[in-house]
Length: 405
Figure 1 (cartoon, rainbow, N blue to C red):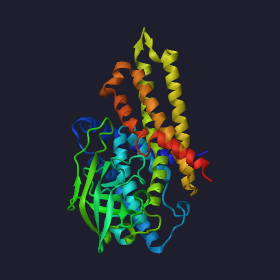
Figure 2: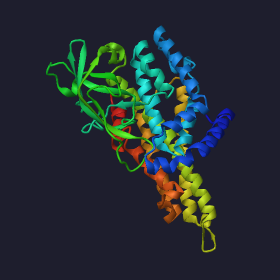
Figure 3: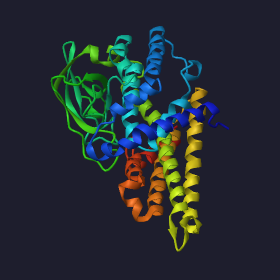
Figure 4: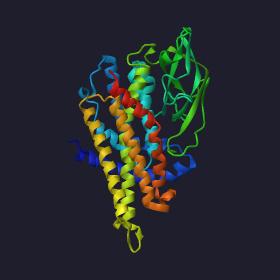
């Protein structure tokens, strides 16, 4: 059975020291004063050599692209997936929003560019995203097509000679207000009269400040305030073919397939985020239950409190096992079905929310104020059941995948 190695335990210890020293003291500024998370994330990159690791990983990816190497990850020597997830878990113990911002920039945005782009496009945009020198956004969701992201997409790209003219809007875009680089999905409008739902999906890269591109101010949200979210507006935005990923309308794995692959990875990765929230809520709850006294004894002596802690531990074990299964499969280069990824996301998201809610209940009135942090973790975890596909859409995805011929 897979478990954390001694090396992993050492990484966890170092990460926790950094989080305690550099992130916890800034939580109030991030939560209440609207301070973006990018400066502290870049400090984390510098502290742990993640910038250099990003450069090394990019060099490997670029070489594979040039050589046409499509070998599975297990035969590529692409690093330790467990070590890469540790930072996600540890950051989520204090600020899931930071993980959302980081994951979208270095994962979704950079990953899409490095998968679909030409070597020149990778060097132009991918490297700076992987090193966090620039902030990236991944723009697919629209005001009327959240769960129906591909079919309901209305943002259009119309050919005009060797260029495209893009019109439309995207919303709920992580890093949208501050993104330097934006990966944008749009439907090809070629005048053929084909049903809009079935039209080809193209993927472009935009830069902040382009004429015709507007990035809104950050939205005011219930939680994940460390993850700036906004709306993008494209009005007669003119782009050259050099901004079309792969510089072709039919790139290998492009458009719809690329988006679906990202959905699988994003949903499976939710287990790491959920685990961080669960571990922190359980830690805080155990400590509080031992020290909070009622009728002259600690509340941890009462069976109802013990029951809550026991079920929180059950959730922790289940989510950790799901994560370890995902890591083991990644190491072996085994793919994960949409049903499996959606099942992990559905359970993990619900478990994180339930554990955070029980933590508030254990803390009582103290759990309802921000000082004790479980209030923030509960608000931050709630969106786990919405983004990367709602609970309801996970159920649909699981059932469809199980029932397909």
